[in-house]
Image 1 (cartoon, one colour):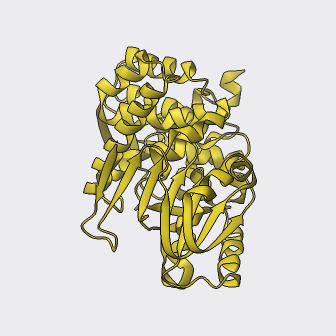
Image 2 (cartoon, rainbow, N blue to C red):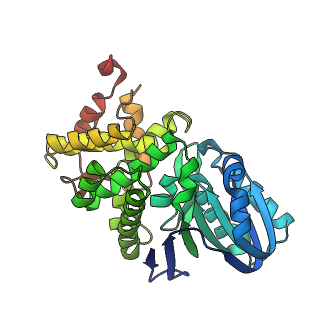
Image 3 (cartoon, rainbow, N blue to C red):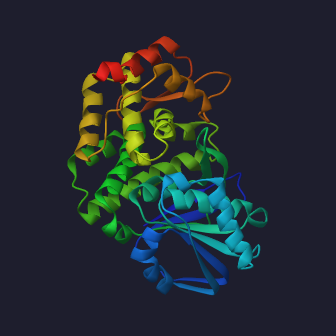
Length: 352
């Protein structure tokens, strides 16, 4: 299956997301694969057997969100210069969302921009991170605050790479699938409730639908000036959680799951969603072994960190909220008291 991405205001106006077995790939230029030791040990030989290039370099960087930094990007850049890649060269992001984000950002910087393709190996990257051109790194102030919109030349999604994915990583990817269904497609949510994604056919169908929905959004709004911000449902809360836990306690999808629970309670407080609907969401998250609780140590500190979110502007916090299942509402006028009231449900004192 091929899902096309069409962009009117980008240097790359069109590319394809291919959901199928990884094909043979030939390049008449230098190629550098960026990966990590975990993915390399499991899958690199298979990828190398599929690639024909004038010159091939493998750049291996440490595994983990805590290494998604400018220092790591500089390490990748140094390797590219050492191997004399030029402006016609190509990078291949081979790994999960962290690898994809950093490889894309590095591609945008090297000699003012070279091409790159995405070959995602985690569910989260296949359904979300590899599609749409968001690239970047974290810093001490927050997640993905340094980066660029930089589109890949192609994305190749092969579910065979998921056969070796740890169950926890698979669950983290499910959070992004569930997110897309809640925001845009109630029938897709029903499908996720009923179908068994341990069957590859059902999994491919779910991945394809998620990619179709994201393509529909990105085609309208590449640089998050409007509807694309809706893809950050749960993320406003999740980014604070990740920052507070120094990106070590939760996988990104796990933090998003907790963030969706928080956003749902805020939506309930505002009368946008029914209690039975938020219960359905929580049950689906729990079904996929995702966390739904978090202890907030300091509510005021947690609240103030919202203002570091990229979507916040003019001292207003933008919240993406479900309007039932399958629709959404964006609000930036919610009172501090209402938000803190929802956060108090997760306070350390309250949970005890």
